[in-house]
Image (tube, rainbow, N blue to C red; front, side, top):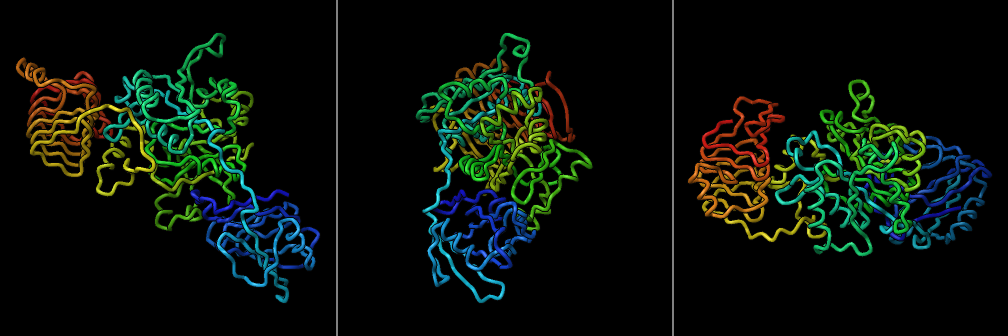
Length: 577
């Protein structure tokens, strides 16, 4: 008989756990006992429960918390079950197996669990107490975990920002890159074995990783960061580039057989285009506690966005029973669930009736190798091929993430998520001294702001602002904004270098446009890519409300009604867009 209990209460970050508030205490066979009623309760440690073997029949009763329903192989706290109990034999069994000490009072100390055993006629009552520290719980060991960050996609939905840059290298929040999000989450979670898979436009991404994480104050201890670039090898199979997320990992499965990686037991797979703060150790502990082969981190989403994600359903034990990648129409409707069962309020549940995959997965190492090499050797994508099939063959568990998370893999979501950072009380912010986000040290001076009006704005390092008006906007590093400029609902990605005052004066004298925004220019609802040159008296407002437009020859695109000024583009004086 295996028994597990933590010395202190586990962190129920997952509402799948939180709704149940239960933890495996023991595995008992009640079959030999007859005609008695058992009530299990707990105090302080109310996550304790007992799970009989499958041979015991238990009715399917509703959980006391309005949470998950119990089933044939378990029950929730405070519930009555009918089993087969013969006088005090079961109590003796408990006492013998779990080293219980008999108590005459129902009062308990913090950190002590107790059970109440009563007979049908209520005449027999016994209270058993158990100190939690005598039990052992397998704790996650970060040294046995490796993280893989997928950074090799073509980034078509973020085009034109990804025309020359890999998606994870796109700037976010004024001074960070998207790759800094999963990298920093790993570092803050003490996961120090990190692989980054790259393919398209990887030069700037490789440069940023080298400058930021190779010897710039980020301590990896005995860990490492390795960039695994797409490559070709001899043989027919090795002549193909990455065909999808799963294929990218498949082509580097040999890495996990290296001697230095022999201790890796679990593999954490992450995306490079999400904005969130997460302690991966909570996810990994959930993965271990449930003895999962695969764990999928997920979030509630609304009707309008559900079709953009992989959606899943799971049973009352958190096991995923169905996974559908970006379903449509009737298939989409079939994936609706009652999210109040996960602890959401009726109002929130009405707004978010779907559960979406975050694209954050944990695989047992051996299971991942088996799936990619032998079971599904021709499947190329985790979301659309591997996971929908794996839920029928393996213990795939759901981990519900209740904090802020945003997929910013499209122009609209990227724009909205960035500008949301300027809110007075943003849903997400980079300012947290305990879990900082790391990025490349640029050694820039503070920004210089002259007679300007700022409202709900983020100004990055090394900027020059002269008598301008900036509202609900982000100004990237090294940006230059001249007098009379009005910037509203705009995201400037900044510049890679400075132009000196003499260079700027020379360009203006010759009728050319320097990097930055010229005087008396008005800009609304816009993304300005790096090193763009916008002249004086320009108006960028999309007054006609164009939703989609390709004007590459004129230096801009329009996506979802948002004007995007291209990298290094020149918008001459007086132009109206």
